[in-house]
Each structure stands twice: as C-alpha cells, then as structure tokens.
Image (cartoon, rainbow, N blue to C red; front, side, top):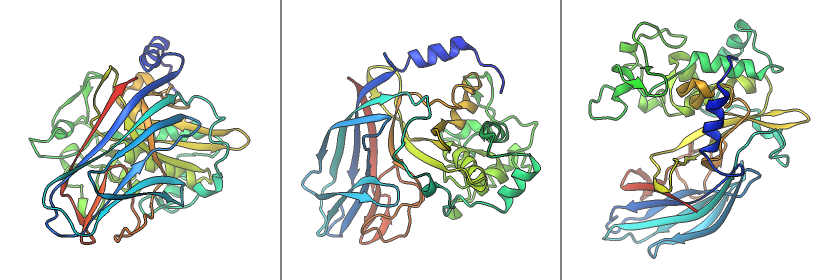
Length: 353
C-alpha cells in the first residue's frame, strides 16, 4: 500500500479526541405525520455498549406512544418498537437520547466474545461464491492477505451517488463535481467503471432502485458490476469477497460525528471488520479511504472515535415487522396498517460532552 503522510494521520487522530476517547451526546429524533385513526408501528435502532463504545444515560421521549425495547437475535442488536393501534390526528415527535464514549479501534483484541462462525454466510444482497470466486481467482486474492482484498476494493470502487436530479446534493458526482480532499473530479469522464465498464454518462441509467440494484443498498453484485457507490456498497463488496475466502466479516452501521462542539449529523456511515484467527477483529473503512487517499493506510486496521455504532449485521428480523428481513437498519422504519410508509421526518444531532 502506498505510504501515507504521518502528519496527516496525526492531525486526523488528534482532531477526534483527547486520550484516544471522544465523548458526546447523540439525539435521534423522528416526527411522524398524523395517521388519522390508522395503526402505526415504528422501529428505531438502539446502540449498545461494546469494547469500542460505552452507551449511558439512555432516555426515551415517546410523546405518549407505546414502546418496547427489543432484542434482534441474529446479531444481538437492540431496537425500539413504537406503536399505536388507534392512530393520532396530530403529528408526534419521538426521540432517543444517549451519551457515548467512543474509543479508536486500532488493534485486534476487541470483540473477543463474538463467535466468528456467525459471519461466514451470504445475505440477501451480499452473496458469496460464483462471480466473487471468479474475481478472487483472476486477481490472486487470498485469505492470508486481506490487505490485498482491501486494496482491490479500494482501487476498483469509486465514491459517488449517480443522479441527474439537479436539485440533489448528489448531482455533483456525475457532473464534474470536485472532491475537496483530492482536488480532482469525483468521477472522471475519461475512465470506465466496474466490471461492466460503464462510462460516466451511463452511470445514472444503471441505477435500478426498485430492485435495490443501485448505490446505497449494500448490493455487492451492483458494486462489482458498476463500481460506483457509497459506504454500504464498498463494504458489502469486501464482505462478499472475504466470506467467499472463508474469512468472517462483519458489517457495521452507525453515524459519523463531525468535529466541533455540536450540531446536526447529516446521515449514516458504515464500515467493516474481519476476523484474524488467534488475534481478533481487524477494522477497515474503505469508502473513507477512497474519499481521502492520504488516510488509506490508516483505515486498514483503524477506525476513528468520531462515530457511534448502531447496528451490526444485515437481514434483520424484527418483531411485528410484516415485510420480511431488513437489508439495512439505521433510519426509522415506519408502517401504517402493516404497509411501509415514508410519513415521517428524521433528524440527528450531537453535542460534545
């Protein structure tokens, strides 16, 4: 792997916290539209204390709605089930607040209690074998060199969210926008992308959101075919390759915390770790490495402390949820009369403590 500026690493890590820890308060807030007498159910992820983070002072403001704290058995996550059978005629705002003390994950010896054998199989959007075995064979990837798998995904993927919507903040990616970390175009027009060798002009048409064959769905087949996506796509691709090599790989989803004393958190982030026999779990953040190449060495084996882990795993099975396994679970899931609904607004914020 190319050498990285030690000054850049020092600045990055020191900006996160003092003594390798960072403490902040996080607020997860959802405003639900009136349901006008119809049954409402909602599911919200709840973080847990782990070797990397300590969660404390967890409080719920449910605006009079019923709620239960539930356990997701497959990956040992927790979530909140919020419900009201009779509905309500005015909007309801619910929130979850908690304090986080987060460590930098920079060694193997974390999560020693986790059974690695639980993280070897396929998920609905993360298949193993077949095309991924072919990719492994063609590129001489091996389980003994997971850094090589990291570098393969890093070099083969490009960060971008293709859209032709001029009003979208993602418009920049396929229309000449500049990555402020590199001073170069996010997606140059003079190369092709993915195994299907799409041109930049073809990227938007390659998105099929109805079939979750698009950026942001963590679809590893999409990731290898198209080669352009966000953090879900990078780490799903890495997971398909790693698990095909019989290396346990986990998918983490949470929120990145900006620098500063407080403010809004724009959206989610995800990363991965893989198991090294006799040592433990080794973290990677490939999409952040791609956005800022100076940190590519750092993000192989290190995860900064400016984030909060919310859920681990994929294909979640939630109590009373009527639409099958959840591919990803970070934003609130709302059902009205047992049907999916987008009738809510979400807001995330933090405050340094």
